[in-house]
Length: 263
Image (spheres, rainbow, N blue to C red):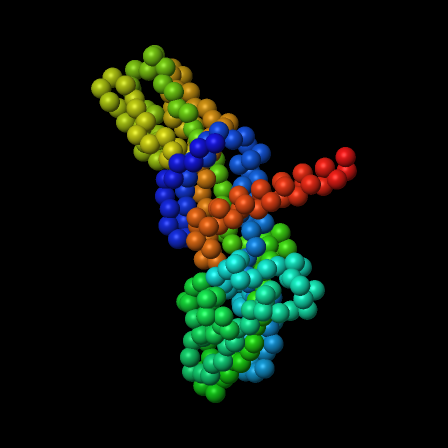
């Protein structure tokens, strides 16, 4: 297995995974979306709300605000020693107090843990007019996207097979395929057509359809995949990918232990 990084930032990652089968690639994608533990607001106590939004709407907005996740300090509630009663090991308390006229943003939320806060301070919650108030206390817990979408740290994770574009010797470099390519990755080089960046190919096959003499073949490499991963801010993109791989390894170990116990 080989990994080639194409692009990497805090929010986005793009890489080529080579030497694996489609099941492994799809497992990594699904793990990013639904298996990585992520911190999110689980419930709120609203003490005062005279805004234009109902309490339920405030709760829905609060639940979808990304929160920086620290797996070294917090555990899933089902794995905590408190038996899911709630303690500082499995939950985080946040507070919000605002009075209009003001636009309330996620950055106005105060965390009881200085190391864990909202990932984006510019998420709008509600606009308060004159004499309107919003006072609440929220509790955030770890969860997985399999349980609820608010725990989904990976918001745009997917992959495609690496394209393999081949030009036959019969190619006369007429240029029709070059004109049809929507990604503009084909160019005429002398009496040949070359591919400038095959990773940008979207497998649309317009170049193949444009060739009258069928001199172009476009196949998919079944063991190489171009991955795209985007984080909501709960994790840096790199950590999201690492955590998803670690989750698969842990689940594989658990399955192996179960199978050994049966024998």
